[in-house]
Amino acid sequence: MQKIKDRIMLGIFSGLVGSVPGRLLNAVEHDLGLTDSTYGQMAAHQFINKNKINTPDGVLLGSVANELIALSTGIVITYTLSATGRDHAVIKGMGVGSFYWFLLYGLSAQLGKTAKSKKPLSLLYSLVDHLIFGSTAGIIISELGDDSLFPDGRT
Image (tube, rainbow, N blue to C red):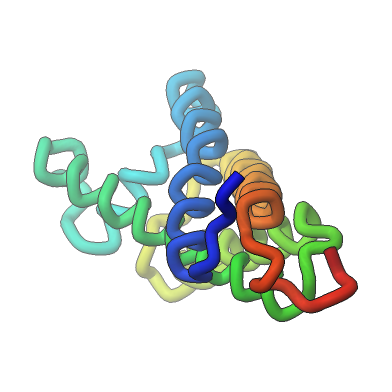
């Protein structure tokens, strides 16, 4: 099988595909009333007023913004594995995923960029989603990345 030799393309692919399980889980959590909002709604809130988030334009903006976050996370995980090796790819991916979770939902909420959740468990569900995302992206990168992208002896 042809492996991906470009770190950026590998990161984009792994970020987009790796985000699917977490995004689907978030949609289910939101539908069950366990979380305040979807990731698309949270991403849209960075750019537009809350009353515009669920409009067609707001949904599109939120989806695009969320995917850009996902692909950037995939790129960071790719470079992390490229620098440190693909051993423990799941744990390393989870580390990057949880770091993004902290930045997006901890730090940005403290800075007033995102609304604080009214449901404390919502944040834990989100952390689980990000751990799943990071581990999935880590597996994709480890499996689809060309050997030349990783340090010798750490496969």
